[in-house]
Image 1 (cartoon, rainbow over the protein chains, first blue to last red):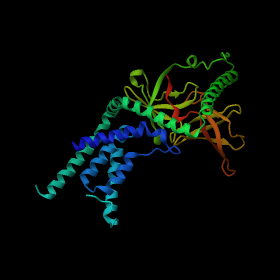
Image 2 (cartoon, chains in turn purple, green):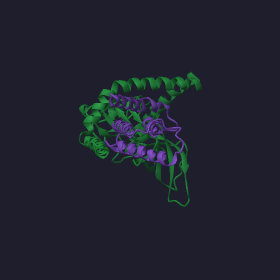
Image 3 (tube, rainbow over the protein chains, first blue to last red):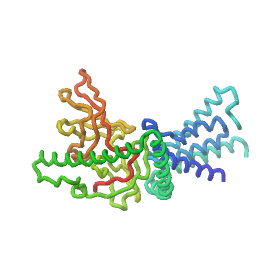
Image 4 (cartoon, helix red, strand yellow):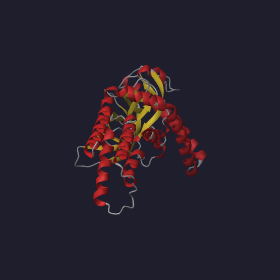
Length: 100
Length: 260
């Protein structure tokens, strides 16, 4: 159930990004909501299964609505999540941002 | 089940999911077409809402009547420029003069009207609601009603097509400055930026010069591209280059024509 909700959530985000946000760009740059979410989520939830699910869901819908092949954004977001997890583990002392 | 076998099974599941996603590339067109089809109503709605909200904020900062007048005048100028270019091309090639009152777009080309349903500014591409079922194929040129060049079709699905804009990175095609007959190569730089490159240093170009497509493999000749903006001239370089300010408004693109 949680996975389905997550998938629907990212599907909606992708739709908003591709159909609504282009009207609100700054110097031709549109916000990539999914990327922003994937970067900030590890600060609040360290559960690796949850983070992997968000990366795959977000990446899949980014691939659907862009000319890139399937797997392109999935692998990038998985890499970003993994990197952020390492940074948090190694360099963030304070547990302020982590709510497990 | 101990900790390591549980971890192994999770890693295995992850690998299977990734392989499944990668295998979808064999059916990329079908899968993407399916998602575009089910998303179309929502996209259209979001598009409309975005347009309305965007317009609302714009009117706060701009005087409404002046803006409307400006849009009407822009369309008139583009229509007149388009007519002018057609006449000049005919004169140069010694072909029979066309009627000067209208652009005569449907007399020149066989066209398919399409609606823009998605825009990807990061990749300088748009999605239109016509595809292979409407006889569209890769490589077809896309223009506006005023003969302004937008780009060409790079991906075709059964009901939709992806159009790469002329500003897409690494796209290049022949172009020239009308009136001065200065030829160059128009290059896309991404994020809606286009440059006119390989202009000989001896040629004098000015801000505001009109650029059109020149005969070549990529696009038919005589299609409007934009005006010359900033000029980059360096005595050390053999060529000068200039920014082209595209005539099409990415935000306002709603309906386009595909040349069959």
